[in-house]
Amino acid sequence: MKKKFATDRRSLERDTDIEFLRGSGPGGQRRNRRETGVRLTHKPSSIVVVADNLASQARNREVAVRRLRDRLYRLNKPKKVRILTKPPVGAEEQRIRGKHWKARKKEMRRKPLTEL
Image 1 (spheres, helix red, strand yellow):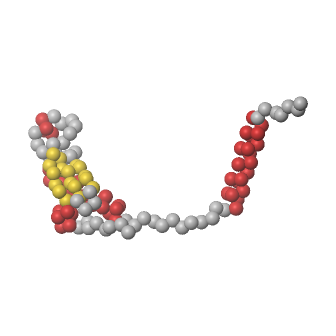
Image 2 (cartoon, one colour):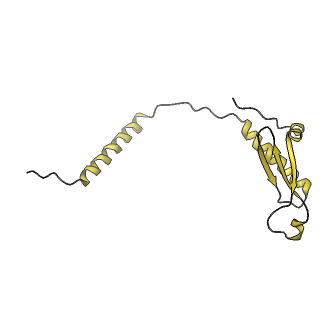
Image 3 (spheres, one colour):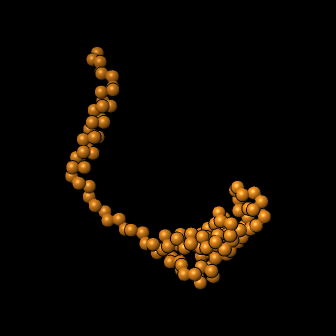
C-alpha cells in the first residue's frame, strides 16, 4: 500500500527544504543579481519542485508550494482498479479472420512447389 503524504500548509513547511536560487534564462541583470527562484524538496517523497519565472521570491514560493501540493495530491489519489472483462464474440472473430487473412497473404508470396 502506498504511503499517504500530508498536504496541509504546516506539514508541508515542516517536511520541505527551501532553497533560493538565481533564475536561469533571459532577463539579464534583473535576473542575475537577485535570488528569486525557489526550490522545494519534499523529504518524505523526495519530490523536487522549482519555480523561478516570477520576479518576486514570495510569489515564486507560493507557486512552488502550489505545484508541490498538486504533485502530492496526485500521489495520494488511489489508482483505479481495472475490472477484467472478456472481449466480445465479434471482436474475437474479427481478430481470427485477420490472422487467417495475413496467413493467406504470406502464403501467396511463396514460390510455387515444382514437381519432379
